[in-house]
Image 1 (cartoon, rainbow, N blue to C red):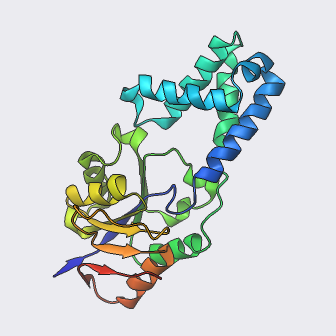
Image 2 (tube, helix red, strand yellow):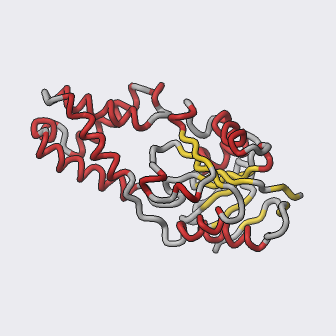
Image 3 (cartoon, rainbow, N blue to C red):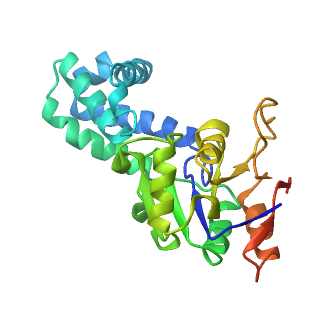
Length: 244
């Protein structure tokens, strides 16, 4: 069996860069900022307490799960209000958060691999997160971008994958979605009718009760190699995997 790959939709966090180090740095930098500008809030909500508050705000507002920026702002507003701080500082605090959120460190192979992939096929950034491609300096490598906050629903909802295909002007089966998360990325994309490529950097096991991904690679560079090896043809073999 073979299938065309006319375009790629690409997850961002934990596919191009690891997110946990970003999250840890955000907590430290935001805590330092609050200690200077809103000391009562910093005292009431040190890092661990702020993390617990964020989880509570997320749980209490499932209608905003597609909009992480709104949830982050709401968390800061709650922290300032509940500590007797100045809620008007929420905007400035969010700016501190967002600047750190967009300071990313790519996986060693990822940026060069993205450049190689973008030279072969149109790439659309498809993310539930709130990364700013221009701030990171990679917007020129993407034909389009679609975030869950813009669409109004998050992966693995089929509608966001379908909207990405429409933006690319491609049929569902002509688009390969690439990401690290088994459910949110790969299985969600495949249920929506796209092809799914799992970037499995941790040598994790694919669920035995799930249909296998169309492709599996240990690095984004291996996907770039795979695309380049098929240069000149828009059809590729189904069910291939690699561990490069």
